[in-house]
Length: 402
Image (cartoon, rainbow, N blue to C red; front, side, top):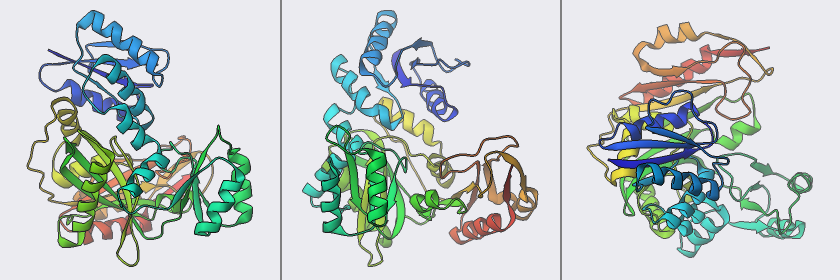
């Protein structure tokens, strides 16, 4: 029996889906390390409470209690981006397999990541780690406006700002309180189509790659509350028009020294056709991209993740039979959802095109993120049909706020 330890601060529904996939593997007993243990523990052979799930000493102490009870550990896992470096540290201390600290740090520290990518000759936004206001003004003098300012260890668009002019810059620097002890990452603002490139990778070699397109970019959505966001997974992602990103994705993974992991990379195709890397994370994608990978391939991506992380195996075939899109429901308005209009009309019109959904509920608080208050997933063998369904949803469905 293989003992797998899974670490998370809180038992979020999305997190527990990964836990259930681990528990379903043969010859596995799953132990959870949580700050707040889950109420339903059917996926776990045992749950251990720890004081701080983001602290390597707390994680190590919890692991040692598990070892005393169950014997040697087989794997130490977690899916949150802000946990990967701590997990790597504990793995090294306990002699467990998996991503090491030096590699995890490159994926977590976006400035170090971009330094490594540029050293390998790979295209990414020009950047500078700001430790003073003078650094910021010097960077603007080099690249011009706009620039993007964000934490060096941020995830997604959290605390990410587009700085358009001197007034924006002064306001951002004041809020960030930039200093040698509070560095902030500044990047050249990339313009173009934004996509993701998501992989299952074994021993540094990509075994499965999936591509999505963001419509529009997440930063644009964050800046404009009236915009509804879509993540499109086109059916055709293996043709010659995608060959350059498949090659670049493998080069990125090689340059950063990744072994066996799932990855999520955001990248841009500029107007001239050239590519630029946004950033890459060694953890599962958010924004319902796991769902899209499942619906486009008719496979269970959570089970595939578990098999990858525990057994270092990706089982095929992964034939991409469908296009799919995640449509995130939101509109400008108040702070609380009052209701939803047009959903039945849209469902009646689209029928089997709708394959999954989580609708906003009356009384639900408005989200501060770009994923809104709910989502609908559409699927069809023809990408154009999926896009027409997206347009119909936009015309028909409205979230109302109090």
